[in-house]
Length: 74
Image (cartoon, rainbow, N blue to C red; front, side):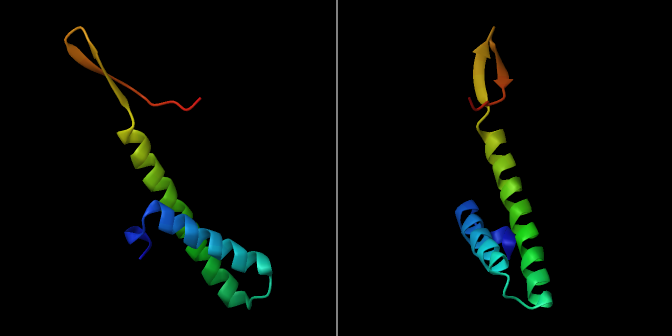
């Protein structure tokens, strides 16, 4: 299910999971389930960000060829 979520949907669900975990009013098993879901969501978001970063690479024409430069945030 996690793989089908957009970045925005995954972040929103991750925030819900964190709020539930921070409430501290959960049975142990439910807390473990939420923690596991949170880890999966965080990994999914990281993968989506990595793919987005790769797509943002800047292409510059140089001497008739194409040079790829990584996108860097300032």
